[in-house]
Structures are given as structure tokens and as C-alpha cells.
Length: 334
Image 1 (cartoon, one colour):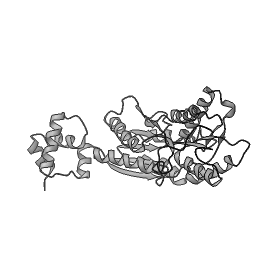
Image 2 (cartoon, one colour; image 1 turned 180 degrees about the horizontal axis):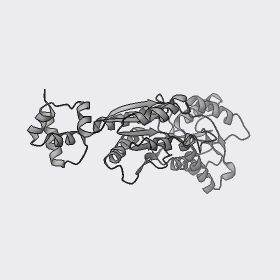
Image 3 (cartoon, helix red, strand yellow; image 1 turned 120 degrees about the vertical axis):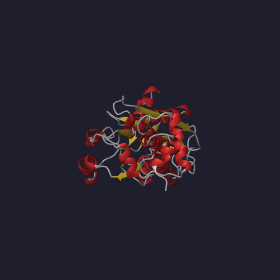
Image 4 (cartoon, one colour; image 1 turned 60 degrees about the vertical axis):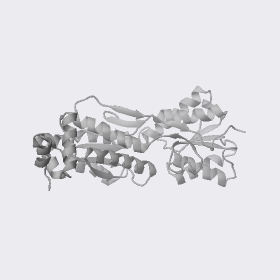
């Protein structure tokens, strides 16, 4: 069986240089790195994680904290993170902890401080529980994914722009009675990204002189939540909007189902636009502002690797672009 010594001899370098070239830790010239990797491939060498850890002083493990594992966004995000970590030779240590749970509190106060991790990727951290402050005390390179990133490197979309783009699309079609559906009333401290989308909606309404037409029907962020909130909003005939901006695609789909069950045709009687481009968006012909959680996951690993290589470098924030995808759930008001 081939060892790192065999790889080093084949490439004509020291064992330490070979370890650095294969692990990505420390400086190695591009030419040397390629020569070592070619030698490892020729010898079918696979580094044992324990040996690599001893050679580099790293655990070769990255902790990933998520509030949910079953929803589409988080599943896609995890796929991107896993793709990036596999490419960089790191193991993924996953913590799926529900917000506000005792297990999540234990994770931040007891588990992470004593766990040896090369870095941490935290998804959807909200300011209410001061979790970001606790994570910074763990003393591992940190990258967050989401709108709230106070004092950390981060990857996100521009949630405020997403809400504004969705609303402006409806305004351009001629709608005036446009409502925002979904999101918590305390979004500023608990559902920060949802709050930014709501802020984008309000800014677009104000810019168009439609501030008095603004309306927010609060609710959760799942498809059943969208259905429930949609029934409440559309059941009021006197104040029924002609168009809805949903906080996310799942809420938008729930609202479409509610409208159809109430006898309202989409889009001739009600236009609906979401945010995400969920895997079911095409099936419901949903107009949406597209984001790519998988791409965000890959980008987060790239930013984290930069943090691990240069812990004292300035914090980095990478904002991925989102785009309007027009399907047949929106039309001019009749």
C-alpha cells in the first residue's frame, strides 16, 4: 500500500511538502502541488484523515449548523456545502437543531466550545438568541449563510432586493392592491431575511406612491402556512388584493391553492409571485425571484477556506445575484 513517503519520493519533494500539497494547508507552488497530486494518483494513494490531521495540525472537519434538514432550501444548501467540502478534503459534521430548542442552546454553550473543528458554517442565524456572538467565542473560522451576518464573513442573496424586484414586477403589470404574504411580525429579530424581503416590498410600494395600499398578512413559511394565510387574506372581499408577493415560494404555492379553492383564477383574478425558484415552482407555473441555495453552499465553503488560510484577513461578504423568472402566475389586473 502506498504511503505519503512513496508519494513524496515519486514527486521529488519532502513528506511535509507532499502533505501540504495534498491537504491544501500552507504554501506550495502550483507546479509542485500538481506534481504531488499526479504522483498520488499514479500510486492510488489516499490519505488517512488521522494522518493528515497530524501532518497539518487540522481536524479536517467543518461543522455545519442548520435550523432544519427537511425543507427544500436547506437540503439544496447542504448539497452545495457537501460538494465544496468534499472538493477541499474536509469532513462534514452536521448539526440540525431547531431554533429555540434546548438542544440548540446546549450546542452553542457546551458542544461547540469543546469540539475541534477547522471551521464553522452557520445557516440562518437570527439576532434574537445572540448566537452569532457565541459562535465568535468558539474561536474557529466562521462563515454564515443568510441576511444576518453581524461581525462574520457571510454568503447571501440581497433579500431586500428580492422583495423589491418581486413587487416592482407586479407594479409594472399595473397592480396597485398588492399584499405581502407570510413572515413573522417580529422578523427583525427572529426571521431576519424574511424581514428584509418585507422591507423591499414596502420600499417598492412607497416609491410607486402605493404606501396606503400596503398590507402584510403574517404567517409561517411552509406551504400549509401559505394556504392558511391566503385563506385569511382572500376571504376578505372588501380588502382582497389583486396581487400577492409571498415571502417564499412555498407560501406562494399555498396561496395559489387557497385562491383556486375559493374560486379565484390565477392569474386573471389574482397574481402571485414568490422568492426562491423552489423545485416545485415550475410545476405551479410560479413567477419567482430565483436564488440558488446550492451555489450559496459552494460559495460558503470557498469563503471559509479563505478564512482558514488567513484568519486575520478582513471579513468577507459574498452576495449572489438573484433574477426574476416570469411564468404564468402573474398578469395585468383585469
